[in-house]
Structure formats: structure tokens, C-alpha cells
Image (spheres, helix red, strand yellow):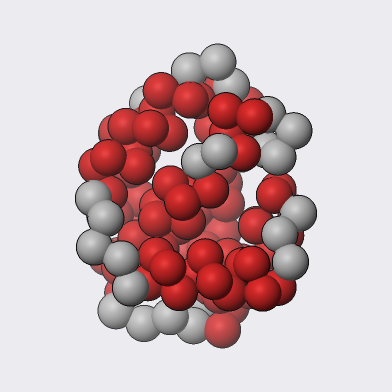
Length: 115
């Protein structure tokens, strides 16, 4: 996504949405954190320090999830393949450490907002 300027500029939004899935079950597992790290390394070429800073930023932020979903929805209009891929990333975050229904409730809310 780093090659698409409009999506690259929304790193905080991607991180906020990922965080909302990760924290849905009130537990941040090592596997979930690994998925978060992998996404930002692969898709945005962020260094481990940059990823850690982004994770801490969204973890400590009170930013509005709705705002970030609106930004992503608008940006994804021209990039449906990337939207589908991001939904796969969210799903991998859910299943990587065992499925918790609270995570799928959040996933469905996100899906409804983005589609």
C-alpha cells in the first residue's frame, strides 16, 4: 500500500482499525502483535522502531474509530483489491490466536462501514 500515496498517508487509520480488532477481546497476544508488525513492515516498509511507535500511538490514543473508517472507506473506493486484502489482514488478526466472538463483532462493524 506504500506505493499508493493515498493509502500510504493513512497509516494511522490502518493502525487504529487493526488495534480495534486486536483489543476487542481485551487481550493483546504475541501473535496479534506479530500480525500488526508484519502488516506495517510488508505494506509500508516501516522499521521495527517505527512500527513500535505506531502501535504505542494507537494504543494510547483516544482517536475516533469512525473517523478512521470514513477515511479508509473514501480511500478504498478506488482500490477495491486493497480493501479486500485489508479485510483478510483483519481476519488473520482474529484467527491467529484463536477465535473470540467479540473480535468478529468488531470485524462485522468494520466490514459494514467499509463496504
